[in-house]
Amino acid sequence: MRPAARMSAPVERAITQSDGRRLADEKAVELDPKNLNARNSLMGFYQNAPSLMGGGMDKAYEQAAEIKKLDASRGRLAYATLYVAEKKYAGVFTEFNDNLKDAPYNYSALYQYGRLTAISGERVDLGIKALMKCLTIPSSAGTPGHDAVNWRLGNLWEKKGDMVAARAAYQASLAVNPNFQQAADALKKLE
Image (tube, rainbow, N blue to C red; front, top):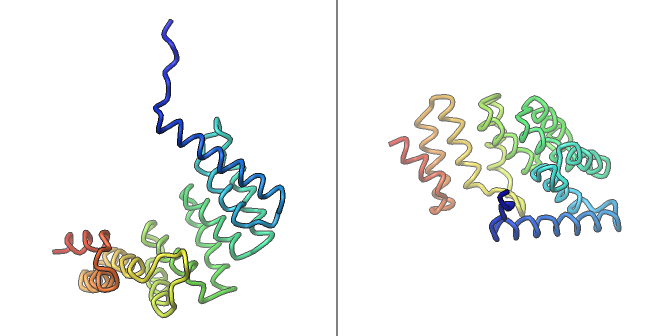
């Protein structure tokens, strides 16, 4: 009989850290059920961790529901995050549309809407409109900047077959951040 295989030290460390974070977030929610940051962190853990480690989409959706009860806008973004992971794009678009009805200048929601259209290839014209609106608003802390907005615009213009507009968007991205690698790579592919 062979001995059980051991996990590598980095894998063991990652599991221990992840479990520690989960326990800390669970305790934070126990102490303050309205702690949205802890609930969001738990949702991410449950979404990504295997069931053997306590993860599961059902638990992630429970956290999204609690987040939405406390803050409708953040809850919609939480649901959208889970729907994207499961490629349930219709659900994501519904959440973003509802969010943008309530807050039409929500930078994060506008960016994520445009990002989703770039990923899914659906509703490209609406994605372009959302990202163009993003460029009229200062980026919020913790959200992708205008360099990323222009890069996503370039992705969408490529999907529409407008390589001139795509090139201009990638160049605008690099004008904001000359080190934005995705935009540099995309521009290089067009040449």
